[in-house]
Every structure is written in C-alpha cells, then in structure tokens.
Image (cartoon, rainbow, N blue to C red; front, top):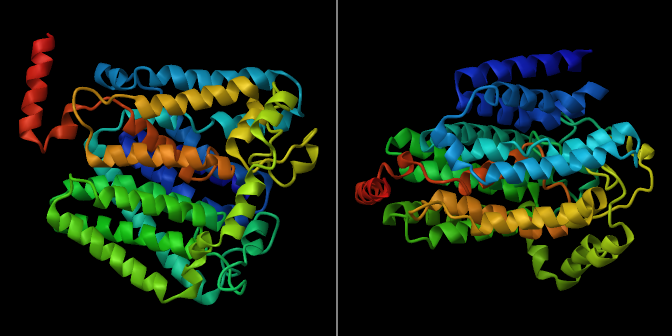
Length: 442
C-alpha cells in the first residue's frame, strides 16, 4: 500500500512540474531514477517496481498532451516514424499469446516504454540542456557522496539482502574478491557507472557554454563525480566508453586551451586517485586476454544466426528475460537466456525487430543535423550513443536500465535532431551565415 501511494505521488509531482517546465519535469523523473534502486530494495512489494514508471508516465502525460510548435515538430521529422515503428511492432507481437499476459506486458514495457525519450530529446533547446546539466551535476555529486559512504561503512546500511539486491551481493569481485562494487543509490553498480557516463555529454556541453564561474565549477565537479563513480562501480564496459569519450573530448579542436587544460587536470587527478587504490582498479583485468575471452564468449553463447534460424519470430515478449521481476521469472514459457542485447531483441521481437533496431542505429549514425556542423556536446552524444549500441552485443539491459536508458535515448534524440538557432547563439559569424542561408531558401 505504501508503494502504491508513492507511485501516485510520483505521477502527480512529475506531471505538475512538467506543466511548469520541461526541465523541472525531467529533473523530477531522472532524480527519482537516481534513487529508485535504493527505494526498490527497501520497499519490497509489487508496486515498488512501478515507482519510477509512475514518474515517467507523469512526464509523458504532461509533455505529450500539448501540441508541439512547428519548429519543434520540424526538428524531429523522420525520428517520429522510427519511434512509431519501434513501438508498434512489439505492440503487435504482444497480442500473440506466446507467453503469459503478465510476462508479455513486462516484455513490452522493457522494449518500448522509454522510447518517447527520443522525441523529448529531439525537442530540447540549448538553454534547457544547460539547466538539465546543472541538475545532473548536483545528482552526480549526491551519488558520489553516498558511494563514498558505502565505500567506508559497507552496503548493508542502505541495501538489505533480499531478492532485489541479490546481484549487488554477488558482485564481490574487487581487490582480489575481497570487496563489493559500489552501487551508490542505484539497483546495481553497473547501472551506477552507466548513468554517470551518460551524464558527461550534457555536462560537458553546458560547461563549455557557461560563463558564470560557480556554475562552471559545479558542472566540472559533476563530471569529476561521474569519473570517480565509474571506478567505484568497477564496471569495465563503462570504463571503456568513458575513456573513449574523454579522448574524443580532449582531442576535439573545439575546446579552448583553458578548458582543455582543465579537463586534462581533472583526468590526471582521477588517474592519480585510481592508481593509488586497488578497489578502483578492476578495469585493469581488460589486460588479461583470458578473462576478456571468457567474458566475450559468455555474451555470444547463443549465436546470432542460430537464434535467427531457430526463433525467426521470437519466443514471445518477455521471453528473453529482460527486466522480469523475481516473482514472475518462473512463469516464462520456453526461457532462453542471452547476454547479448541484439540476440535478446531477436528472441522477443523476431528477426524483423532486430533489423529494425539495426536500421535505426544506422539512421542515427548518418543523420544530418542541418546546414551546420553540430557543437561538440551533440557530436559527443551521438558518438556515445553509437558506442553503447555497438557494445550492446556484450550484455543486455540497454533499453531497461534506470535511469541510464532514459538518458541514453534523450541524448540520442538530442544528437540527431535538427539544430535550432539558439544552438549557435555564441557563434555570431556562423549564425549570420545560417540566417543568410535561411533567407536564401525563402
């Protein structure tokens, strides 16, 4: 009963805040996503699994109930068709009674529920991204504060041992199998690390544009908290993505010398802290070829072609086991485990479904932003989105991680939308050329 009341409260609060401002609504929704893991672990009943879903529904109900402006609609042309297709196909498959109805609904939720974040991201304005980045910086610093507390006092104070936290307490593979990975507020350490990485393009873009010192320092602190969070969570996959993203940013020709120097100092400080603490060095197992070979082999244990031939129409929504609660896991008919997101999609959506997703990823990679070169933050968001989709063959959960998946889809929509004039407000020469081009088009 308590969790049901929390669900209703989350829906109403997010709905109301979104009516006032999209940034406020996103802040409420993503902020609740940050603490969802610890709430879910401590409120152990059926409705606790729907707490964050209720907030997302409040965001959707408020935001999509208003008509978008012509400028907003024009910026996500093409994207709307992809979102409609990626949602419609699983809905059609859900009607086919291959699995039990509850399993089908949970599978449908995992495959489609967060896809509207693509449209929200495509309509974000530059000033809204900057305000959202300020919120993410505060959330990252809060997560780091709790992660540091867990590092010193242990996890039991925040995460009781139960079915929800089973993965947390199985992940004792740090510092010679003597310590746990740190989850902060999140349902597991992997989600913590992924969420931290996904905040980087928003924070970096706002940090570059910001002129007020206190806000720049806060965003820089948020990025530092994100870096430390990845190593506290001891996630190798996210450490690889983080390294690629930081190299992309530092080597970019768009950063001013002082900004590049600040990033280099921040990275050097992170390297120093990590190099002096064994618990932060799990990523070094990437140098062990035997460990990496075993990990990759476990992710491709069900080959793509074999799965396509054996299950051309899938085994039903939810049949891949994505986000199925522990109290429903024994109801899956013909369960087929997969540690590969594309195989998982094929198991649930069939061959057509996985090819639709591959086509969508290719569309993101080739999507033009308009007449001008996008700023660094948006190119970074596109780069990070493509890296995560490329690495999805090494695990599952890309579309169902709270709140990482929402941030990923938000960044993807933002990265592939058409540039609005406000994006180039700080570049008068280019803006003038853009205006002249627009006038010529008339």
